[in-house]
Length: 268
Ligand code: NAD
Image (cartoon, rainbow, N blue to C red; front, side, top):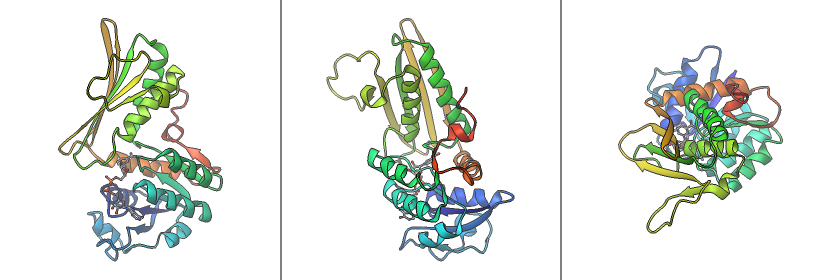
């Protein structure tokens, strides 16, 4: 199986290259960085902090999507939309870890998914996806007397809030309650907010240091509180999940898939 990596120079891009090179029975089809990046022309293995692998980093995404069976993409929403179009043209499977995707971005990905399989995962770790499945179950069991609040903390370089994972957890809780997250989300409280609206799902974001990703889903009821949490300490969990998703996705029917499909968590 030939796996390509876009966003090669990024924090996750480098992890993804290293993970492909460390995985048996898969081959690095190529690595693409943004045009003008210093990484273009360097050896992908060296860029990823491992040994030279003989695959140079290029800025030719068209060639990569034509060559690879599947491409792993942790970049920015604008780039991900363009890559999904290339995936549709080449009928290449596309694993998307990019967060901060808007409704318009999702609509563009839906179009691409008519032609090729796409896996969209705001968090590729086993633990977080298990947390999402558990949050859905708990939200279904506890009624609206239990207020749901989602707290996340990430490193100081993160550019979007709440984190894609926090939104994924919010979606799971909303699914458990049978409500629409867009109608219930309370994001960024400040000033005189008034009392909490029953049934809303609150989000709070902390930023600082080099925190890889902490998430807590709180169910706060009268006289008691249930808290489900997850802490990531190593980004390699996301890269390992992305490789697992890539291997699972190749050969699937066109459509949108999630990590719950890859990990078999739909029936939890
Ligand atoms: P980063 O800024 O280090 O890397 C992003 C890279 O994408 C940069 O190198 C940038 O040059 C590159 N890029 C942008 N446009 C490009 C283009 N057109 N062609 C090629 N490369 C392009 O960020 P990061 O920490 O690696 O995170 C990237 C994304 O992945 C973010 O959205 C982040 O939230 C998300 N993320 C997801 C998971 C997950 O499990 N799904 C885990 C960690 C991070």
